[in-house]
Image (cartoon, rainbow, N blue to C red; front, side, top):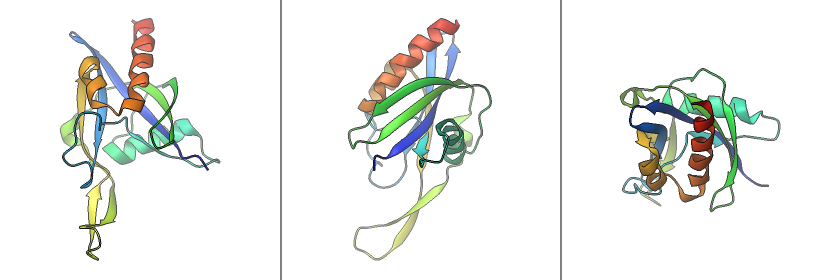
Length: 155
C-alpha cells in the first residue's frame, strides 16, 4: 500500500517577497542535516480520512498551533521513498520560537535497548522562496513553484 501524507504550506507576503514556513525533522538521523532536509508540516493519513483535515491536524500536532483560513490545493508530489504528499497553501503568521511539537520514541543509540523521546520536528523557520528551494526536500520543491503561481494570482 502506498504511504500518503497531507500537509499545509503556510506563506506570507513581505516587503522583500514571498516567505514560507518549513519544519526540520527531529531525532538523531536528521540532527546534522540542513540543505535538502526541511519539509512542509505534514503527516500520514488512511483511506477513510480527508486529506485537508489531516493537513490541519498535522500542522497543529507538529507546531502546537491550529491555523485558520481557507487553504488552496497545491497538488501532489511523490517523495524519493515513494510516499505521496498532498499539499495545501494557506496564508498565516507563526512565531517559530513558540512551536510545541509532539514527540516519538526511538531506540537510541541503536541496539542499546534504551528508548528516547524526540520531538517530531525540532525547529521551524520562515524562508524566502530562494532559500526555501535549497532547504526543502528535493521532491517537495515543485510545491514552492506551485505556491509562487497561486500567490501571484492573489496579489
